[in-house]
Image (tube, rainbow, N blue to C red; front, side, top):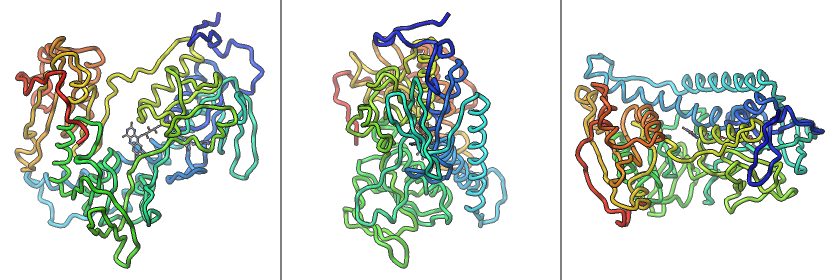
Length: 498
Ligand code: FAD
């Protein structure tokens, strides 16, 4: 018997396989990125008949180019992390000398080789994602999808021919796209798409932006030997993160040779014989081989014809959804970056899983945005979970206890690298509950993932303290921070947004 449930007063969702339907599909998905592929597979496993469309493949996206796997696989998390690994060898090779490795003075780096390997890997993953869909019985169409009715989609194929299908439910999972600033000469700059596929290695790079993508590319190119200028509007990069940790990242970037330009914007780009001339609003002039705009992303909602059925958007163009990812049109749903909630792959996956469970699995499932961990893959990386000190102070009813540890990682004692690892735990003084944790140092994302489980379980500081450490490791510091660095009263005004 099909289980029925109530969602916001609507009783009609249940196991699709057991429902009579006159539609071509139970579910048609537009966009086969992280969210789309997850929703397709899970819905199909619950017995739904699923169709999905995706734009033709290319590493650099456009309004008509994409590829199965989406941003994360083709031009986001995966290729970025491959380049971070590549760049990390630069520092590792320097550090290796004091560990007895006799390296000749000059070490060459072959950008083209790494790029080739990266492209091979994303081609492989694109194939795997296609197979995941076909193995789950999902029908894939190559082309641009748009909505033509509350239950109707149209797919325009490469040759211009159009396919039309009806579906009981439509899921929009079209992601987001990098934006460029509106300054003279902006066409000379590139976005992260092109930055991950550059033919020539940029010896001189100017990066505009203070978000995680800007910081990561600064680390990547600097690690490979480029001269890097990072230009951002605030006092520190990584707005929205814990201020103290932002300062640590800035210090590390500088320590590794990135030129920081805080409180600065770019005003003009001009082509010269020597490269791209970049002007800042402080009157500085920089010359670059590459200017990267890491200035935010916008939801891919413009070309979906949403106005025809009246799907509501917010001011940023993101599709408005309820707690279950349903739009104001009952048959149309949306997940991932196009809804601009928390724009991360694991969050798109969570939203898509919940969607499939709710609509086809007979289980009411709301995505849970508490304690979502996050990593910035700078070198060394920053990783955080839960509340920053500023958020904790803002939200706490009483006092907040802050524990910090700044130490020289054991590896650096021999290598001689001057770079501290910094950790922080933020605790609610009244309940002893750990509200947030952050770390900037080697392996931070690997360590914080485990701490995230503890926070999800509602761990107290006493439980952290009673956990036995792993020795010798940096991670053990998280269970040995005994003395309070500071006690902050809940009514104190946080300094935030430096
Ligand atoms: P996407 O994965 O972007 O998929 C949307 C798909 O829809 C695309 O394939 C697109 O081609 C397709 N599409 C769009 N319009 C249409 C249409 N009309 N018809 C058919 N298909 C269409 N997240 C992390 O968690 N960790 C990271 O380290 C990380 N690093 C990142 C680094 C970079 C440089 C970037 C840009 C992003 C990074 N992200 C990271 C974010 C992550 O990639 C996204 O949050 C995630 O991919 C969102 O998934 P999605 O399904 O919403 O969209």
